Length: 284
Length: 356
Image (cartoon, rainbow over all chains, first blue to last red; front, side):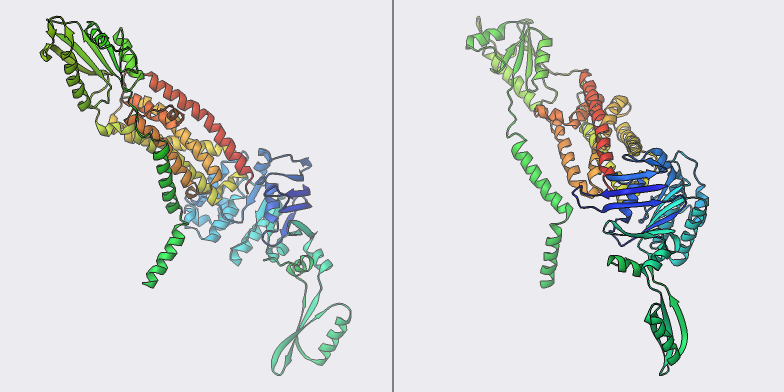
């Protein structure tokens, strides 16, 4: 549905690229994620696709149609964008923010009160956004991105700054939207969000894609399974970790035989570990 | 004492980086430069007197003295009252004198002055005319001062209100700044707020155009401007000239708001643009000097939009029978706004397209 080929972007038009030769595809109804540290080029790529930044070099094909220049009105009518920074009108109430935004579209829009219920802000509908906490503003911005019932949804760090409960409701909402057929492109530096939500993930650093696959395949391909054994020694609980390949299995068996083992846990590699392995950089 | 000096040192270092202090220095430099290079050291009064001499007496006197008729020479003889008035209109330092035939061996002299001539100047002229005529050589001797029948003094525009209160004289200037060009600062503030809150980013990903966004802000400023204009105008002046003055104010607001859009494109907060706002305000204030001291009327003032605002408002509020000033001002202002509105929109949309 979204096909990006050889995308380049330079903020200063001087050959220093924030996005360099990036190519990927997002299938219809898929949740696709870009995982990378700050400044990796995640938001820039998303900005180009969403029409926030001019399309400098490369090809963007949406539903088989190649885009030239800035997107047209039809495109903006079908996308929703959730921003990293809550950018709502502080002097308007939550409800007024959504109602104002809804009137900017030429298509049928969602009932603002319904959206506010989804994000847990229905009770604060009439309150000015200036009185909201950061998390509430974030939720309001997220709610705004749903106003036009988008079938392409861009989310930039959707759970950043949210408490675990709220983050979970947001993630649930994202999955619900996917079941309705919405194509979702999200960017994050949080490996848990990427792992939990995304059907496929692209690792991006310094403007380039280092790897692209499903979370499971990335772990299988680049990660190493491990087993952590907790045992009692001198009245204290200690632990030891073993790999699951080669000689490590034999060592594990021997260790179990020789020690007072209390617990055994298998562990799979985290996306961050794989990211560091592939790129040499962390996610922070 | 060391704590005080420590704090003073810190304040000096930070202060010299503070925008308000830099603005103060900048304003001082700018005003000094204006005083030295723009405001003239003296306003040359190449005063002339236009004379319609229906008796031939004064012309006879001038011929006797060997004077030549020339505008530069100080006096210029004209054939009609209309020619005299036209001459005085073109030369704002000129006076006029109409000498009518004797009535019982007496003269009737009508002195025409510019509307802003002070009483002291007028009295001086009356006395001077007395002296001049007492020197006229006529058959049988010179005329004594008692020969004068009447010296009537008229201001050039006899249709103006002679006693316009000074506080009303300030109204064009007040309207220009508070209503007309306040839009400049307000527009920067409005756009700056959208950019710093990043609400403009959310707007950019909707099917509504940036042009629509700007149009709504221009309309909002026109609405606010209309209300402010009415608040100032109606209690001070009443309904006289209200609609005509409004016709001047509307394009002025649009010019101010268009300049605000252009500055808003480059500065994402109002404080960043404050230096430019200050500069614009100083430039727009310059024609005010000409309004209160018409002898200062260099041609380059007419390149400043506020010139037409001030003189257009003056003509609307204090009509003097010469409506061309008003309509020329309205025409020029609408013309300027017709250029600045699309230009500012183009600059704004292109600038924002390159920004994230």
